[in-house]
View (spheres, rainbow, N blue to C red):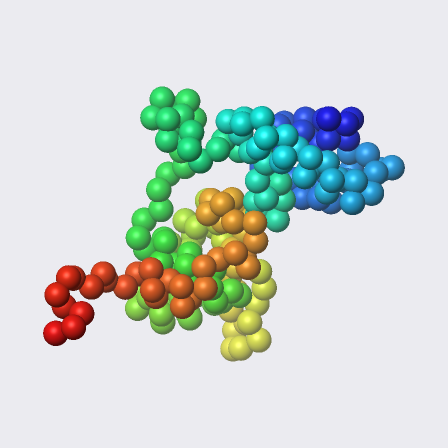
Length: 184
C-alpha cells in the first residue's frame, strides 16, 4: 500500500462523516484527483481481498470506512455503538415527499399528506435531515426544503440519483397476490 493510500485511510478512519474527494485532495496538494481515486480504489480492493470486517463505501457524496453489513447486527446487539433514534411514520412520509419533490414548500407537503407538517419539519431540521434550500417565487416567497447529506448517510446512499425510482416503489409496496387469486 503506497503512502497516499495510507494517508487516505488514516483520514477516513479519523473522520466521523463521509469525506468528499475535494476534502481528501487537501491532504496532499501535489497529488491529482486521479491519484486520490486510485488510492480509494486500492483501499477498497485491499479491504475486500483480505476479507476485512470493514469496507470503503461511497456515501453522501463522499467516502467513509464502515462496518460490513453482515456484522452490523452483531455489533448493535452487543450495544457497542449507539443507533440513531427511529423516525416516526409521519417523519418518514414527510421526508420521502421532500426527497422526491425537492425543492418543495411546506404547503405542497401538507397538501400531499393532508395534515399540518410544521412540527415534523422542525424535527427533521433539528436532526439535520432537511434544510431550507431557497424561497419560492410565489406570494409571500415561502421557504423551500430539501434533503441534506445527513439524509444520504442515514439511508446509505451515495447521492440522490440512487433513490429508488417511483415506479420501483409502487412494485415493492404492492400487496402480494395470494395463491389462487391470480387466475380467478
